[in-house]
Image 1 (cartoon, rainbow, N blue to C red):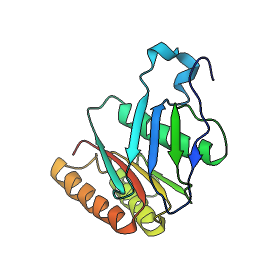
Image 2 (image 1 turned 60 degrees about the vertical axis):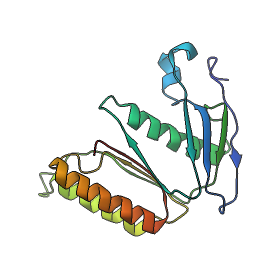
Image 3 (image 1 turned 180 degrees about the vertical axis):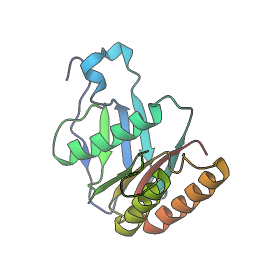
Length: 171
């Protein structure tokens, strides 16, 4: 236990079982400044039949914290460390790919949108069915109609790849 927070060593399953089952998950950084009674733990279940999970909600940073918690559980659990959860069941991943909202690079003439499209392409070309892909609010710098269309294309691409994908969006 860390400061009264519950920890566990995840059950690690072979690569054919891609289910993710996390109960009572807490983001590791929350334990530094908060007490257990102040934190609402999260649960997440990913069925092997569904490889893309869309997380939607208002701008309050909770979607990103939730996604990061899942990444931490995978990386820490795969390394054999305790994770902040009541229980956890994961399958090892070959890589973790993330895409976050970033500024463009004015020096090289790259807009935020161009950077995002390039990162999305890289992920689609390199992710495998054993990868964990976390995409946080894709194309949020575009018009809502364009962002929704691009996000739908991204979901279609991730379904085709078969990677375990979390995608947060307002669309």
